[in-house]
Amino acid sequence: MSLEERLAIQEFETLATAMVLRGYYKPGGDSGTSLRELMAKSNPALYPHVRDVERVDIGALTYVLKRLPDGFWKIRQITIAREISPEVQADFAPVKTTARRRPTYQTGTDSYATAFRGGMTDLLDFISAITCYQIEADKIRTKYRHYKEKKVEDPTRFAVWDELEALDRPKEMTAEQRHSLLHALSVEFHADYGEVKELDSALEGRFPEVVQSITRSGAKDLMVVFADSFGIVADYNRRAKVWTQTVSRAIDEFGFGEKPMFIVSSNQHSIVNCLSPYLREAAKAKGWDDPTLYANTKDLIGDETAEQARRTRDAEGGIHRLETPEHMPFCQVIDLAVVDPELVDARVRWTHRPDAVILNMDYAFGEEGFFLFNELLEAFGSRLRGIYIMGKAGTFVGKRGDIMLPTFFVKLGTGDVYDISDCLGPEGFEGLADVEVHSGGPMLTVAGTFLQNREVLEYFRDRWHALGVEMEGTPYARAIAQARLRGRIGEDVDLGVAYYGSDAPLSSDLLSVPLGAEGIGPAYAVTIAILRNILSRPA
Image 1 (cartoon, helix red, strand yellow):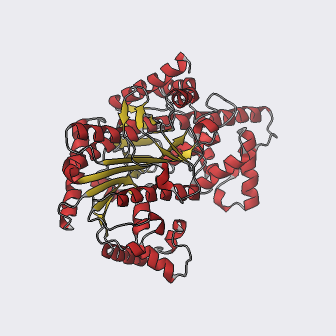
Image 2 (cartoon, one colour):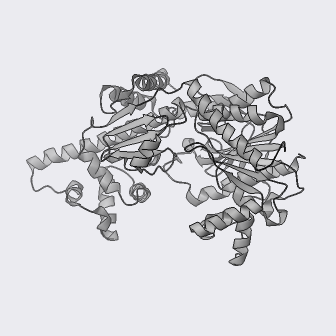
Image 3 (tube, rainbow, N blue to C red):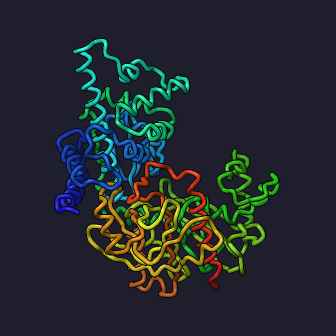
């Protein structure tokens, strides 16, 4: 990695942080221009065509459009706050967010308001996504401008731009017309036709609309406004305290007293699906031979009536959903003393019935994870028997879907190291999905998706023997390390960390290609390995 590339990454973070502190910036203005230049100099691993002015990087564009709020290409102002007020939620329509869940509302015909609870780490990732979008939008505008200039010289000239300008309702095209248009765009953008089709599909057939909107807007039209100060410890701590108090009261109301506890940070489906009596009984009623086909779970809870029936039956089986503050991580609490071993995923290999509970919470973003875990460990530390973290990451050592079991985290930039002594091992994945398990090295934590390049990743792979790259783990590990130093949790508390590969950035297998159903097997393999570990330990 050259000195210029390393400095470009550092300067990008510094400038982005300064803009947040200033309170606003225009991605197409002077500050945005500096960010674009720094991103091009840094040569990000996930952005291979950043410097190619002729080629629109469809892979990078696909990735960022999934991480930005739906319809981002149509807005002229986006306001970023810590929280969305109840008044805004009541008066405006929510906006779908795909790959990065953030409360977002359309506050005008061309304005959004969105909330960030992950702090500066999450904001840096967001700003880098906007910067990538701006670079690719500029390429598209330049191509369109060149076409218009040539059109003046030759009015009979015809190109894909004429087709786009004639489109009023792109969704009403026939399949043949759509394929022809997408192919023409791929040629114009020097891009792979298959990638263009995938992007159009990810946008539900709206890629022509995206291109139209870009050509009809100016580079300096978008304004990003930061309504609050970010990175203030007091605010994070306050929100985490309120959330933890809510969780603690709910657990007391269920009558779990001082039962031993296992904390799992994962998702809202895999843990409960593996233990759900409703799913097993419903699958049997439908005559399914394999009740572990979790990709078909929606067929069993496809409407509100079925969902309510599931909640009732699962509650009878010891699985409860807690009511937590809005836009904070959800939680589920599972009473293992009530769960019926005959009605769980057989691969869990239920061996005994511990009188303990599992607190399963959503995976937190950025610095939010530190404060949430800090409060949880303070509240429940004396009862804890195990802490488990499940996530997805870019893999250096395998392929998409492979499992990574790190032994410590290292943070890019500072070099901070946090030992985790992972209690999960390859043996815990015996007989599960057709995946390879990698262990024995660290995970590299980065501040933003695009804030590293190939040389950086290769350095950590070759010198540190890193297994992969992710964005959230270090804050968790820091909270756990501090809780141990304060004596809030014992040295005998198990700590298990597992990631499954969402992409392989050093093998050109990038995040723009969705995991889709491919991710179900690895996600459930990690889930079952965690449950096996919990059940193998006497509470």
